[in-house]
Amino acid sequence: MEYRKVGKWGIRVSELGLGSWLTFGNQMGLSDVREVIHKAFESGITFFDTAEAYNGGIAEYLMGQVLKDFNRMDYVVSTKIFWWGDVNRNQRGLSKKHLVEGLSNSLKRLQLDYVDIVYCHRPDPEVPMEEVVSAMEYILKSGMALYWGTSEWPADMIKEAAKFSRQIGILPPIVEQPQYNMLVRERVEEEYKPLYEDPGIGLTTFSPLASGILTGKYNNGIPKGSRLDRFPALRKHLEETGILNEKTFDKLKKIQKVADDLGATMSQLAIAWVLKNERVSSVILGVSKIEQLEENLKALDIKDKLTDDVMKELDKILS
Image 1 (cartoon, rainbow, N blue to C red):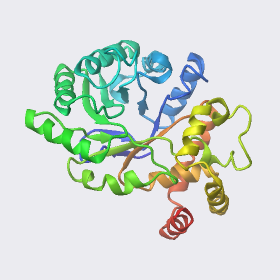
Image 2 (cartoon, helix red, strand yellow; image 1 turned 90 degrees about the horizontal axis):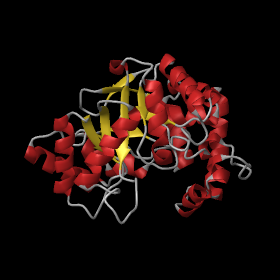
Image 3 (cartoon, rainbow, N blue to C red; image 1 turned 135 degrees about the vertical axis):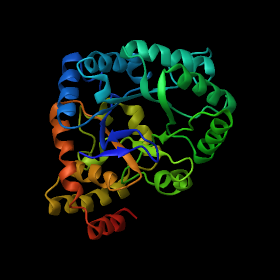
């Protein structure tokens, strides 16, 4: 396991992280969460990610229950603030009120004095950037979080946030958490290019398997009980964004052959492919059982097999 710097900044995270979206409190109870987090930690994963919105705060609560088993200095934990309550009240978005109160409540559920990283979970066009940065000034100076970042923000807004941060003398956003995988590439590989130098952001990417599509299990339809069967809104989103279609399935068959030649599963190849990007600080895994975690960890063995020739072959397939 490598421990990579987050962009140009001093904090390091394990190259594989463990997330809690759709799993903690939904597919997994406390005993399952404890088993998976302990296995992850024993395997070298020290970066754990959650959000106030994940299962109405239950994901944070379960993660907090288990993180008590470890020394606080031995792991990095992050949460994200944006969605909580009624859209017509102050419990949603990036107002200073919600960012401060939302993070305060997250810390109570996590049973922590601070998180290492707090993310603005989405951009909020209704809140001036000065207010967002003012909230982060309060959060950082009060010790509620050590660093801050963004998730799925456009590059121009991240640059604006960095500018206001410098004006008031606080750290700019050090990290962005975007979706990044073989099927979703443009933002990480093109749009964010200027940001890797200034302000020097790192990436903690999510959905390396494109919601399971890159496991190959959907090649012949949507199996009953699978994630896309249980979450129809997610399936609809993937179809509307052009990720889930026949062209993709044609690519998957070719990718499967590359995986077979490497002695890897599709999942392992897909995760290893993301890890090959030097801009990626950590790839956040989402698992609902320990067997999935064990399989995904083997991507670390596949990473070194992805030679320049193999990466060029995959690029050709994906183009």
